Image (tube, helix red, strand yellow):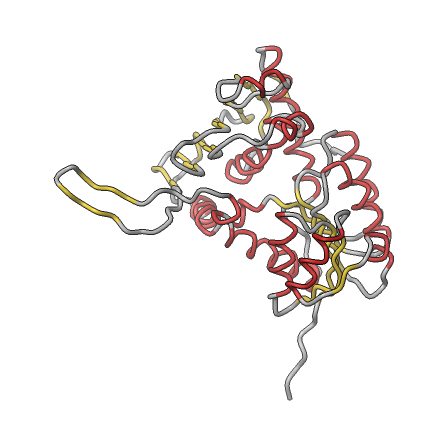
Length: 341
């Protein structure tokens, strides 16, 4: 006798670039059904619904539909907290793209609603699920590098976003580096207590005129003295630069860039490799699939989601501290071990 597998009924809020990725992944998943798509742009919702064999619905209809078990929130940032609260209050599990909100106090209020509801909330820090980064973290936890001393995270985009996006993004530390704050915490396995940041507008003067930076470095220290260093740039002429390194008492673990192919040529002039992948959707395609696998498993298995809403809040607190440090030129103390809500 064959036992029928449970199937998670999923609604998608937001059919833009990242929404299309998540929507297609849900539609292809053996344990989930994409039952409805909503977007403020009707043509975007219609196109994704047609591509995935589902229907278009309003956000309100998805949130109130008792037949939908979970929602994926891929809508604009300023809608995230409200949509999370509406979804969990309606008895739905939630996956939300980062950040929950650009204001830490608003995140705290949102998480209080989530905790009262008892529904799971997972935040889209997809880099934890990159196969190479996840393997490095597993080997780090197994003690291969010994006691952690320095974590280095490098993240550089091929080119800057439009200036109108920069102006509403919350700034590089909250918009771009927030992924790296989460990755540093993921690897350190100990919370930072101090943040020091430097930032400059070296790529595009218009970004500086908009009040932001496009080139930044952050140092963080934990209570035991472990150090994390993060380097960000909005310009990398050689492609999408994504690397991590952890140095410890027994050695070092490192995960490098993903190239377009693994082919190398060797001549008298030296070795030459193909360029690194140039776009985050291609670079992290496997991570997005693994991330969705984890969310669906959480919903069907009743386990606690990771990364959680508290992970989202902690990354936001670090981003806020870095923003303040870059403006004042002074280190900022943080506390991530207290009851944050």
